[in-house]
Image (cartoon, rainbow, N blue to C red; front, side, top):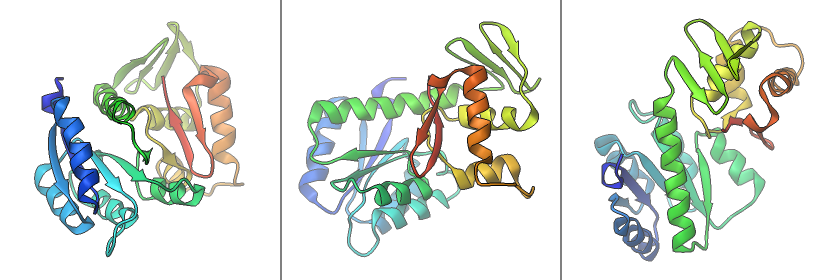
Length: 227
């Protein structure tokens, strides 16, 4: 997929930053949309359905956290990649962002080469997620969702139902951070979960069976799958 096929929405209340980022992205061939506040960003996103939204956290009236939350509630925008742009590195800001559906953070000040590299990595993540079908491969690991089977180096790995559901969820969007609350809702649903460490125990078992490198802990937030 060529760069020109990707649509990126830049949202920041500082025109200089929008111009700077837009200039560098256009040089790479991306289609650029812009907004300088959260309300306009939501309307543009609903109309244009961008592949990636780069969203400033600190904006007047409606900040990036609230904007992200509302974008995620819109039909057709649940799978859009959202990266927060922020000069703040406090853990609570990142946790709040991930909890409302952010996929990543890009920290100011931004060097053009680093910024472009991050954008390309985010879009590769989107392509990887799109490629995940009922039978998907991740390095030496293969999952067959229809048969509820997982293989490593073509040797089948026995996974109980909950471990399989957890692996299927995390691998459905490689690189995306899933919050603990979302994992509990999707994997355990209305079932009574005994103990706060239930997810941790299942992740530990997946690491033992599939490999440590595939499962990343995001402190205070949840987990993600990478390959």
